[in-house]
Length: 116
Image (tube, rainbow, N blue to C red; front, side):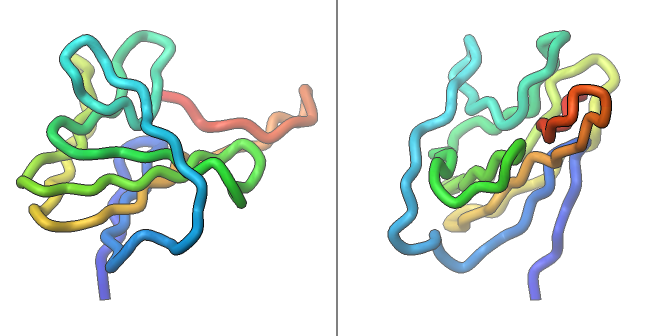
């Protein structure tokens, strides 16, 4: 059984393989070439260096993001901030599913991604 980790609004779980038949697109990268997992209004993003990261574009609940990190060499999920969350190490030759939490805004009556 795999452990589930949380870094701010990002939940991380190691999986055995990518889901079959899903539609994906590559995620954006920052100026250092790191995959941006979750954006921050202040520019202190959650990032992964040295992995292929894809965002699922089909069958995703409203307001949520589901990403997959294909890790070939050891790396980590980092929060690029002066007072950051602890790093989450990611093992080589592994696949991780990353989910961005969502919340309901009763005033706007909408579901949206949680942001740091």
